[in-house]
Structures are given as structure tokens and as C-alpha cells.
Length: 282
Length: 68
Image (cartoon, rainbow over all chains, first blue to last red; front, side):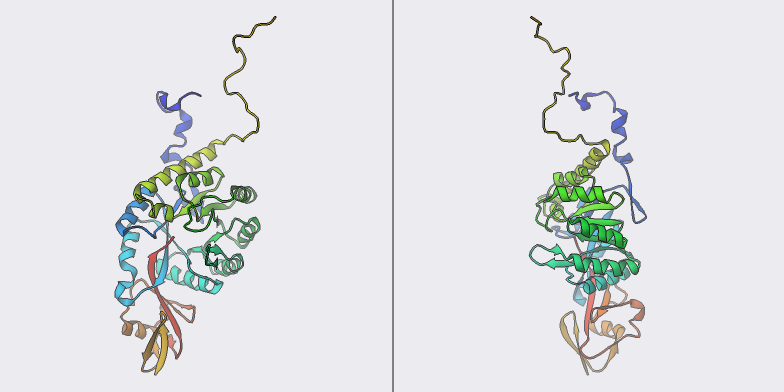
């Protein structure tokens, strides 16, 4: 195999996938170049959070709402760090166990963060934080009617994803594995089928990604992006880990766009066989 | 006298009062980053001035925090 990095100058094909020109994508009318959505939780400090988010190159960050005492000054300390990043905000409805709870949090978030984007989460099981598909559909239908742009966190169930798309979701975010487990993509087959059957939808893997190769795998499958938090925030060095993920996501997308070879069962020589030496007739 | 639950904490007020009045009494900066729901129904900031809290209401006052 020829060594690309020994070439003089950069062959034109590689230039097509350099940072500046990697393909952008459109999310509910917003043009994005990064395919990395990143969370703002679990970092050792707000400063490290800010540095890691900058290193990730992410243009969308998730955040949430919680009860706080009046003395805590209303989350403004955290908010100051977030607003300096200048990213699109994707408030979540984490911790909600019913459609009504999620709808109310979404409405509050829209007013506070001045965005109609919502990462819709309705938890069905407290052990593995698995989404409740039935309440998710109920909340999605109502929120879309109220003008929200819904980013549903869901399971990798094709029929559920189709229903969410039928309701008007332009983005759908099946899990790779349970939140915070770092188990990566438990069921690549299911994700691949969703990609094939919903070609026009923006798909992100959300939840369970543990290492950059998991993110690369998701992009290689044809997913449009990944959403992760724990794998960066709980790394020994979150800032370096954030840039590692950014590289892996770019690599996965470039691989997908360049057309990955199909796997095959039997071996095929890469070196030409015509002109193989040392055999003589008779 | 009314008894209400504010973020799951029992609070007593002499009489029914508006959300705006309650926020001030409780020490919240009403121009800050916060959202209010009463009995799990969102109340927009535009209605805090005229929305009255009643006996046994359950109020949630939420602020921005980090999230995944």
C-alpha cells in the first residue's frame, strides 16, 4: 500500500476533506460544520468545561434546568461560562418521567434560553435511564405543535424512529448504549438499519459513547453526528479527550464520505498477481 | 393564610399573592435566569404579575445548570 504521508504536497482528494472544507450539515435550518454535540455536565470545574468545549469544536452544547436556592444566584455563575462560548443551546428534559413533566420543562427552557430547540428525554427506567418510547411520542407530538424543534433521545428501535420522523422530527438521536456507561455502540446493526431506512433524517448517536473510536464508528455508519458528555468530562484530561473526539468524528465522516469498502468473507490479494515470478511451464 | 410548596419546601404566606410577589419575598431575582411552573404547568414571565398562588399550590422555580 503506498504511504500517503510521504507524498510531496497534499493530493487534491485529501484537500477536499481538510478541516475547512469538510461537509457542513443543516439542523433545523442552522448550518453546522461540527458534527459533535457536547454536554456541559460532570467536568471538574467550569473552567475545564469551557476549555474542553472549545477544544471539541462543538457548535451545540446541552444544558438543563434544576431547582436552586435563591442564594445560589440562579445559576448565573454557570451561565456566564456557557454564554461566553457562543454555541447553540440545546436544553434537555433530563430527569422527566412523564410527557407532562418534559413539556413543562421544555416550555420553561424556551423562555429562559430563548431557543425552541429541545433535547427531549423522557425516562422510562431509572436503572438504565432507557427512554420511555410511548411518553416520548406523546410529548413530541405536543411540542412540535407548539413550534418546538425536537431532538428526541430514543432507543435504536426502527419503528419508534419512523414514528418520531412522521411526527415531524428532523433530528433523531438513538442511543448507542445506556447514558454514562461508555459501552459504545451496543447494536451497530440496528443503527445501520435506521440510517438506511431514514436517509433524509439527521441522525446522531446520543448516550453511551465511551471513546473516540465509538464516535468514529457512528460516523462511519453514516450517522450525521454524535452527542456525548461523560466520555469527555470524566476523562483524565477532558480538554485533550475533547480534541481526540473531534479528530475521530472528522475521520469517521471523511471515511463515510469517501466510500468505505464492503467487508468480504474471502481474501483478495492487494498486490497484482500478473507477473508473479518463479513459476515456469513444464 | 396560604400554605404552598416551593421547590418541595413548605412556605406560608399571610394571604394569596402573585408569583412576582412570592419571588421577591423568597429572595429570587425576578429579572434573573429562572422559570416558574405551578402544579406542573408552565407560567410564562409575562403572567407572573397577575398569576395568584393559592393554598396547597406546588411551585417549581428552576435555573440553568449543566446537562448532558
